[in-house]
Image (cartoon, rainbow, N blue to C red):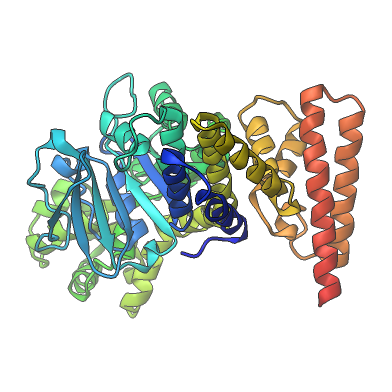
Length: 503
């Protein structure tokens, strides 16, 4: 993926000064440049059996990550785009052992390398979903006092062999995930929050705040049980969890992960849909008994073979089966493609895709540029040669003085506000967060259908409000945040006006 304009400018900085640096500092700067050309790296974290690997498969669009607990689910696994499918077990010394996918197209359960020697598993796949997103599946957290597993910590701190003289913070800035999705089921617990805080503490600077952390409320079909509709409960409960977690995640999205994996990975076959149609043709009373429990559905005598019903349970579980049958009863002529589309929609995955796009990908340029500048600042502070320190700091300052880089300052002050380090009125906090998270003037100003002239005026009015707040009654910390927001809205007004004039 080609870097965006902000990260491209930082990459140019690395190229410009890198050849003038000495010793290990040069290699560290070139490592930053290399990472800027990679897709945004998103770590998937959560407790054991929370459905992390199922989510990974849905995001990839293929069932590649094993969902049953085994050797490979206890090791960090990185999924990235490649021109051919390939699985490499990366040892701690940097050497690699290549393996084929198993006969079902999944990562082999046995990796052939002692677990103590494995750093991580690197999986390259020909999936278009991975062209602009690298997914990192981390080991599940299981103890009552959850902490980041040693494997995840090694990966996030030391993706590949790096000079042992570099401090942990610099290593983390060079190789940490830039965004986090934390998967949980039912209500979050105190140790879930502690685990998320632990992941945040070892990730790159801009992912260590709610702006680039997302909560995923998985398996919401279990809230109602059986074939009952869980969404009247799941929506409000997810909103409640989002309020509880507002200082650690940007949003909480409810989802039925199994339905997402099945529909995204294309696992539901024509034979499966025909089995569902046969079940829909049964008398009402027989269907009611079959759908009363998993045991009855799989074990009761029925015209549809038991093997087919067990497969449906693995693909859809009872809720998905009941949902599909209800639609087929209502419309016996429903096309298979439309049935799959309905199942995909009810999984909640479309909202998750939209949220990921809005929360992470729209901002990937600023996220990666901010991460890289943070890394370069740390490299400069630890450079052994004074001339290297000064060269790097001067180059960083020149970049930060450019108007486009005000987006990074917006992300930094939004972090202070969303984490509670600086308090603002709720309405102002929301306005600042939208300004930091998006390039869409209509979204930022809550005027989705407004003309450019109206948007420009609204942005200028917002700039004036923030300036007035900064000089009248705000604390010093609030004033500093308000002045950054003031300039952000002023620049937004200029940008909208310039685009309208250009048209």
